[in-house]
Amino acid sequence: MTCLLRHCLVLAAAIAATAVIHAAEPHISREAIEWCNIWIPDTNETKLPRVLLIGDSITGGYGPKVADALKGKASVARLTTSKSIGDPALLAEVALVLGQCHFDVVHFNNGLHGWGYSEEEYQKAFPDLLATIRKHAPQAKLIWATITPMRQAGKLDVIAENTKRVQARNQIAEAIVAREGIAVDDLYGLVKDHPEYWSPDGVHFNAQGVAAQVEQVTKKITGCLE
Image (cartoon, rainbow, N blue to C red; front, side):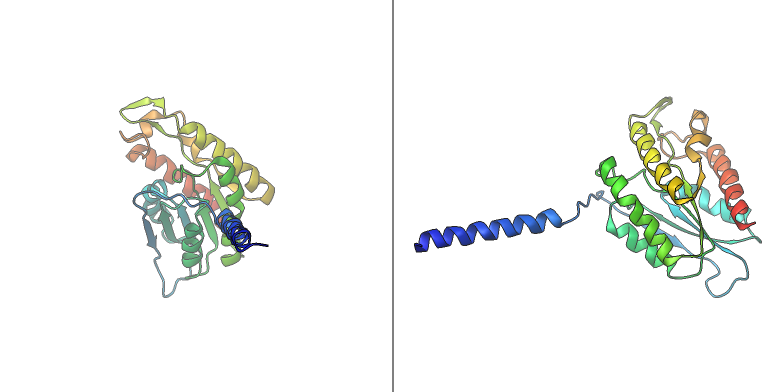
């Protein structure tokens, strides 16, 4: 074997090995700005059950008011984040918060971020989120909150195109949680026929929409606590 041939074979093997390594790397799609907000009250002591709300800015909208509604019945913490299912950073954030306290109920939602992930990737990664929650809160009762639809900014009577992807992700999530025996809080169904619930951006909700979500989320959590 000539030196040139040997060199070519070594180079080809190196390229092949590099390709295998890159193929094994997970696909991570992030936004230009990522954010995370953690709120854990009563960290020293509480005789009340502990509830954790996991979600994004939608959860951030109703979270504080759910805590007010459950005052005296439960201590309500929240983790709101822009990280999407499919991003290992989401699992790290969830594990971090669940490791702080014992939680009795975990009400969780994810799906309005991470548009760089396909629905196939979302489906593949969803069980990892469940496994992380169950690993760090094995005794908690779980409630999956469906992803809320989107409307066109400035034209709230028109459903936004990305709502088709929201529907697909909800179908994926609901099939998985049904197999796992996890309760569902259908926030999508609650708001879908009420354009008057939205803020002008077509994603977030006004006071009326938030109030409707607070009422339903509080009722779902109360049912689990009882």
